[in-house]
Image (tube, rainbow, N blue to C red; front, side, top):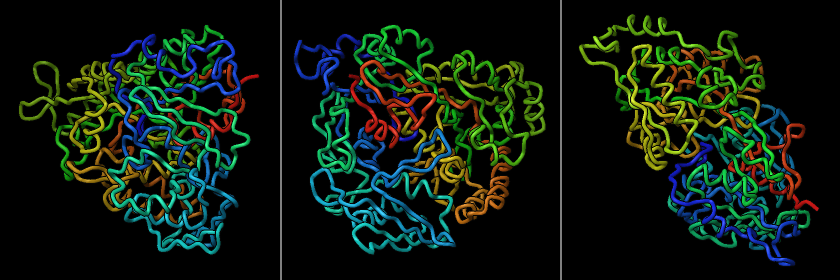
Length: 563
């Protein structure tokens, strides 16, 4: 997966039996190392990579390999997005704000080392926070200072109470002695990464890459899994076959019939809906978007023409959650929803209502029953990634439902790279895609990163890529939203923040730059026979999918071979 989606482009080019031959420990010899049940049993993971794998462990690169994000490189703290809980210290020991929220004092753990054996000190943290990729323009950082080897003082121009996760939980800490030599972080592949996490790179091939225990990791003595092999799989069916055959231990993927892989007595599964699934719309004609979806009336009509209940059952086999058009996660974020009417998006289609919206905006029906203007019918292109079977099915249903309301949509599939390029550059009309759910019980991160406009530097004109660390692929730019986002960044007053979020919600519910569909099913399949320590429904200590950034690294430190 890339940094903002749970899936990859899937092209069926390899069968499970052929791929299994390349998996470490798949054919154990009697008494040999790495065999089933051995204490050094390799954990085999699919996190979304497809062939050919190319070595890239740069956390700022769109094509970064999953093992870089948590298993190798870490932020200061781990935030559990499945619960409203306190963060867990990784490199960090503690942090506190001053009274007005402009200064954050961070303490890191003593005696830390990088994987190459060199000391990890406050100087590395200072360097990381001032490094361009972690400190984009508009970040507000005034200064970063190490007052001793384990204390860092971060000073900002405005209060940073609401950006807690961004600062403490998603800013990767980099070894200064390596990255100070890197001036072009966008193209650096970091093939031999030096990190603070539990693993280091052992081997990279086109079919897989292998991580082994970092002997300099702060918890090396307690690390139960010593070797992790991330494999490349080019279609869901192959991954499903590998799970069923006991050749794969951990995968986050959509399987409509999970019993097909649990019958071997090894694999268990859990579903943790967290992330919104939406229709991206390139919504802003002022920034270069083209197509009828730039008309808010068309987006509003499409929003109520969609039968979400049918999509939930037919495309996602009932595993998804209901979505709020405010993008607050219900029920976790219930207190942030300003208007109860916006708690959940409409579940049934309102064909007549959709028509009324379009007619009020000057659209008329043609002889074929489709709305348009000046004799030209609305005709929109909707793309999803080839092999994302649930998304592909949902796109087909949306095409059919929109047609019932007089809106012509042509659904098609594309390869991953075409999908990625389209949303990055804004050269699309509609896309079936995902939104990163917030890692804390607060929708601020979505409001800033996905709805923030040019003022808060979360988007860019069509033809240019979105700023690093931001995700406003719709090119939405609303000064009212931006002003509320800026004000929310600086407040620690809950009532004030609720009022600001109410302002944001009123704008985005009306404008619909992303048309909300469902809170996506997030299935995780885990080998609970050979490994212990996995997140469970009773102890959901971390977001469980294998592709989760930071969380996956934390989960690996909790696992151990079963005795």
